[in-house]
Image (cartoon, rainbow, N blue to C red; front, side):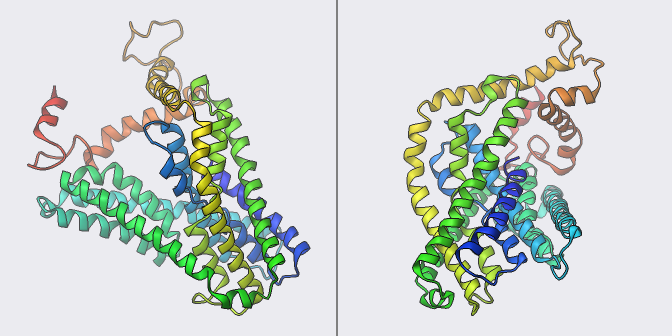
Length: 428
């Protein structure tokens, strides 16, 4: 909801707001494609700073929501951006919006399918090919190459590379990662964490150096007041667009939950809203991709958008990032209570789902394991998330894991993640 639907709402608000407000501030030569691109560019959040502060053990629900939304949001923003750049704006009519929506869903679903296929292929290769066993180098190399292969295939077919890699990573963490040895697990975990940190650092170093590029500021031909007005307008649109979907979608989510412990409190909603205000690497990359050619431009309007993007990224990262930690301390005064509530909700969800499967009036303890004659549709309407998860786990344990591996299905190999003790415990 937050990562996909919320990003689309934010995209619409920022696009419409910039179209009308920019014309009131300064006369620009920006086209309809440019305004749509601006909506996609500034819809991409950067929740890295908030994730550094949030504790996964103390606030698991908030951490999962912020992390999940941040990753899906980046992928959705890039898919929207690619869909906008592929549109023909020579003749704008009612069909243009339908083509934009069609391109979005085409890129979204094809990239998703490609990522899942690449992840399953990597899991099957590592599970069946024995030459990688007992060699951490080979296992790590295969995992990296298969993940990079999914990205290269996506770029080859003009799809979204980050969306493909995202779903490939989900599948690989669910299947492939459990097929390798313990040393390979540790190596891949720390290797990818180090690579991502270095890449993020290089991005901000590049932004900081580019902020001192006097040529872009001169090319924009804008005064300090105009530049501040454009940047302030973009920040205001980001704040409004973020609030326009976080609070309504949180309200809808709370109404869909039957338990009080599963609802999002207003202070938690505020943290979720605040977590997505920062703009970072994806915003800068998309802005340079659209408004520059090989990192430079001679068009004043494009240069103005580049400098405004730099201001928004630096301001939001420094100001919002510095305030994040004390803000979370003030609002989340009882992290232990939040942890207990989230844990209680998680442990009772499957028990409640099991009760739903039983006939009305029956004692669950007397009928343990016997399912009622209720239709799957009725159960899906009563508890949609839990029901889908329940049937998916049955299908995953019965068909997917035996074929593609994972915990409990890897033959015993000395040093492998499936040890002899684990096998005996599972058999017992």
